[in-house]
Length: 310
Image (cartoon, rainbow, N blue to C red; front, side, top):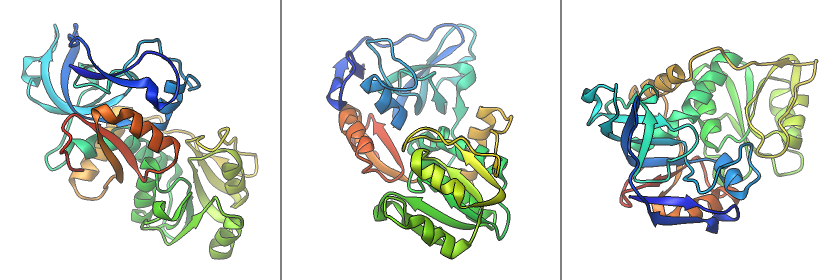
């Protein structure tokens, strides 16, 4: 099979497409013929050797894939063969034509949902739904969504708007702000926080997907007791909410249930992921370059079929 190998830590050029042996599903596992694999910011950090986790080299990066079950291992129902599924892989193995997943991690893709959308919603969808459930934006409340042009952020905007909240989307460029928010601001520009204050006064909810200085500034925009939901650190250390505000904990919910909920919302036409870049498998290095340069709006995907249309 074709796979993108990481044999040494380094820049995007360290990702090289090669022919490698096909994986074989073991007991309790299924072999997926991959149609689409997701690419995440964390994977760019792992590739560079500075991520939150360390890869054992050589490695195939990639955690989320969608495709068709080709074969199953011992103890797995043969009826799964041929099913359209989306799955996590435990962090590795996704940048390939074939991938092995635990049978218990497989989630059926509902009719009407493309493999591209299924992968885009697998992690980002469950994160957004979990965060929105926990923070509970209400009708008329002012909500700030940082990194609003990203995979999770764009979904949080949709969910908060659907809840009746008044939403401000903050992102790093005008290209990332074509959102359904009531107001958009560029948080790389001086004075962005003042624009938020002028429009909303004090905020009720902040979804902090950036951290660092941006997250710290966003916290000051909350009213006393306002809810701070922290889920990212792309701009620096993860924000630690102070005692003046309410830190929103992650809900005690099964992650697969959240992913299924996101796919059901997509099948019903109520949730649509933003897909910014779809590249062939061999272009994984280009995908990492674009993510690191913050050139992508929404989710970045690799496809084993270059003509795939998101």
